[in-house]
Each structure stands twice: as C-alpha cells, then as structure tokens.
Image 1 (cartoon, one colour):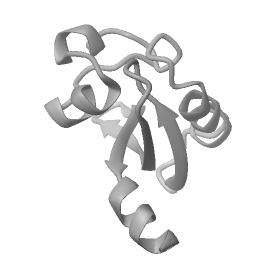
Image 2: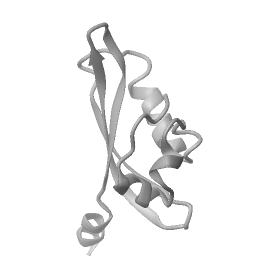
Image 3: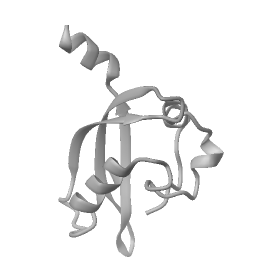
Length: 100
C-alpha cells in the first residue's frame, strides 16, 4: 500500500516532509517492521473486523529512536474494503517514564 496522507507529526517523527511521504510505500519509508506487521495482519484477510494494534520501535533518518503504537483498521467505501488506515502514536516519553 502507499501513503495517501501523512500528518505533519508523522513526517517530523520520521525526519522527512509530508510531501516526501505522499505516494510512497511503507517499505520505501524505511518502516520494514510496520510493513511486515501490516502484511501479516491486514493483507491476508481484508475484513471489517480485522483491526490490530502493536507497539514497535523505529529509527528515523536522523538516527533518533521512537517507540510507536501502531493501529490499523480497514478503510471502507461504497464498494467495500479498499485499504487500511494506519495511525502511528509516538509513545516514547510514556515508555521512558514506564521504565523508570
């Protein structure tokens, strides 16, 4: 799948711009873990109940590490399921507090 829209916070977290994210795949963005998870959970069965959430860690282009909570839900239109909506929540600060 390709990115249709990325908010400014995701672009900043990844160390890039919104314009550079649009039209690119998760693989191109250097998010192999997320791509792997998306392939595992969302691709085999595109079903309305196929919603998942996972915690993962990424390293952006500047070498900064972020702990993310990744959520995926099927995207529906009048023809049925036509993709997924994936949200990334940076929980790095919460994880840092949790570890201390």
